[in-house]
Length: 259
Image (cartoon, rainbow, N blue to C red):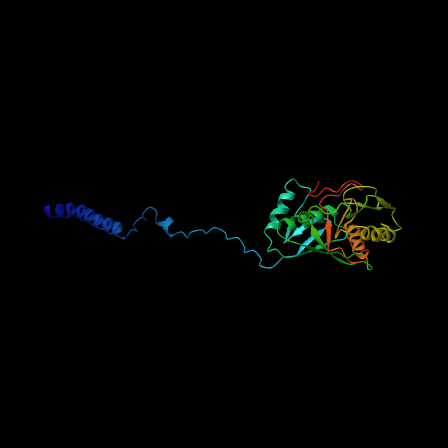
């Protein structure tokens, strides 16, 4: 009877001992918690985005009916920040003091073309070659000098523009009596305009001429007028053709600097 009691009293002790052994083994085999900051150390670092390299060559420069399109950037000059955006886009071009080619759609606004030419001059371009699909009997390519590169021309220098009603006006740079030619059947009367330009260019010693157009007329007509100026120079003495930044008032002195 005593032996039986010893057997039963020993069993609970063995069970407790076995449980402690298993618990210790479980603790030893359980994974240790990771140290603070280990996950953060293993996470890959995020690098700042790298700006794409600027093109080494001159990108396409265009002015169409929607405005300037400079190196892939559309500029809306009607927006408040438009002029500043245009200046920034042009200052990033690799001009390097060389002439620049500008494609001008025939439906572009003359003011937009003039704005681009002015900014190109401010950025270092001595001349701008403007290409437009104009009349077949006139040059489709004209070379203009930005307004900012001209100063103190003779007061008799020829100034001409296409008016809002498609008539043309010719007057001296310093102001004075102008000559107006009414519009033709399909636009400005460039035949009679050319005859008057020939006389006025020959009567002045200036080697520079100025042209512009009302912003309500398409650029094509301003381009054709510029071609008429060069074609009317019988003695080929004009070496500078200036596209004015702002449309002047016919008969009044021309103000350089956009005034």
